[in-house]
Length: 464
Ligand code: NAD
Image 1 (cartoon, rainbow, N blue to C red):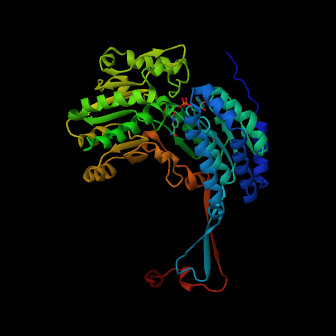
Image 2 (cartoon, rainbow, N blue to C red):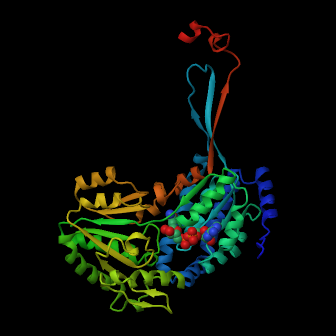
Image 3 (tube, rainbow, N blue to C red):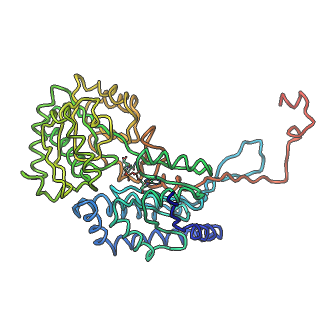
């Protein structure tokens, strides 16, 4: 029997715990210096970061800056501007019965935390949780995804120059390293990835009663109402296309998985989409520099199989060409693929957009509610009644009207899933909260007391 490889990080972890116990990470000055270290990293290594993203995913530098570097620069300045206030304890009231007393809620770090990240946004999904963990004063192990090796090794080799390497470490590796990390005792596990591995993480966490945040995926729908003006339709279609095809080629957890439209609007929509796709990606999308590549052969073949399903093949109305050597899949639109086909039951995570037509746009509520709750939902409408119904009658991690993915860039909104798309929230103050424990601290004076709070009990005391 093959013996399990020992990656030998136990001693490192023990040392990190020791440093944490001695209070190394708790001072505001330490937290600020590490966050500024990350700012310096992004500034000085911007070119290397953009090159690594090109290498791993074929992302154009403009796309990579928009979705990764730019987002992180913004997040860091938001956290640095608010950290002092977040770290301060907040006064709380005690019941009047506790005379001459005071109380406060004191945020404290959790300890040594583990962050797993995914490959599709390898920088932002690694560093955004790291920012929260540092801001809250924790020691951190970050394990990036092995499927984006250039980004993973850039983080592992470069971050130690900018951060306090005694309490913040990057450990590279795949599932074997991940499994061994999960055997350790953590004070928090923050996981971004698939629900399959999310279940493994959760069952490992049970062992030590470790709190977990699971940032998972699923099928995010968009509902497109047949807007009254042609210019509104153009704005909507532009936003939909850039989110589906110009956002890591559809390999995005909050990207659009499928669209729902009214039957009567479908052919008009299709024509509009074809015209606008040509504007974005040219006559020959294969030559476009604006479509990211599929991460690896495994995922390429998975997507190819989705399209090669004979039932699905007949529903291709645009695109469908592929280039295995270059891991390229042309932006592809499907019209009404069978609902029982894999393309409609599994998360697509690629540049394939099924369009489902329904008689009435209001039927989309029932359609969405009969499936697992999505990480994100997008609705393009000017109908106020539909808008209200979407808010009150559907459930999703986030809900955006008339645009998509903008919620990811907002430091003021909680980011996370619900139901099968995960649980726990982060970004901005929500990240700080995710990596903090809020301790209740109460102080009572010795001066006064009430005689009726002490035994012996009698009925008179009960009445009081
Ligand atoms: P994954 O679950 O395969 O991998 C995620 C992380 O877990 C990686 O670091 C990987 O090395 C590690 N891992 C894999 N197998 C492991 C094991 N057996 N034990 C321990 N660790 C293990 O997911 P992925 O392919 O990186 O990402 C795709 C999925 O992630 C999609 O479902 C997508 O929707 C979801 N996702 C969610 C978000 C979000 O913010 N909610 C963001 C990106 C991706």
